[in-house]
Length: 160
Image 1 (cartoon, rainbow, N blue to C red):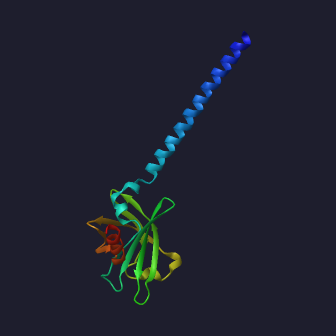
Image 2 (cartoon, helix red, strand yellow):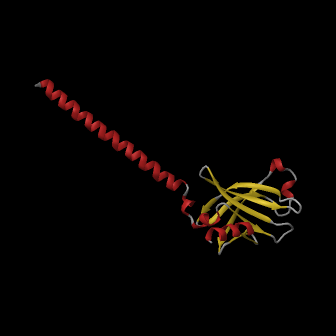
Image 3 (cartoon, rainbow, N blue to C red):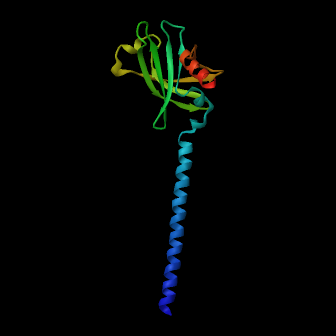
């Protein structure tokens, strides 16, 4: 009879251990899912959903400038483009993009507008820049970037 009681106790202890292990695994999975959600909060951002995989252009200066937004390995990026005349793009700079309070924060080379950043490309100094998305326009400094003609055509074709 003692052996029976020991077997029952052992089985009961094993069941409790399995329950505890199951609970710990479930807790870790829940915590992992939660951390993924808060790790990249801009996933649900209306701003990001409106700009991702789209090129935005401004033609106020010379041949113009552009911004392109994309996601890679759960990281958001903005590529700043300087268009050329006779060449599609003469310069590009890629920056990680962070969205805080519906404003986009990137880092761009200092003196980008004057072209002084081209002097020594190995020692580029960057500054924090805030972009704002409002009414289908991205505002940066005094410039306004509009969705490029190609992107507008893609949206039109998608909606038709």
